[in-house]
Length: 188
View (tube, rainbow, N blue to C red):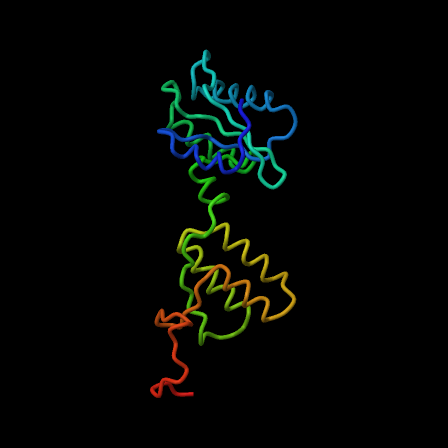
């Protein structure tokens, strides 16, 4: 088992195979490896002689995670996919590609959210921003944004936090910077 830094974990995506990631693995990591290997054998996902070729450990926000290489031809990937879903809640199991997208990548491009001119109720704006983030595939960032906004101390702080995650637009998709408040066609 090799210990990796977070930026090295991102580089694992360059391999020609994926990894199964288990999150929050405390205690003796060899016991985790033995345990998951035995679970795979018991569920007939791998043969009794199976062992992983590559296993990596890495830390994120105080939690130890394990990445198991899925490069062995003896793995029944269909059964493994079902198994992964069955242990998702208990072990935070996910494919490495999903882990990188959800936990290691920053938002590359802020999704547009039509909050300019919308009902200014903060909960309405949270909903608009959350929907925009989710449509763009940023489900974890939507949860994070909601948590940060609902714990903010002022309306202005709430708006500033939302704008860290989204690009504010009007209902037509025009960004805030493009709106000309001196345009004679705009009625106030």
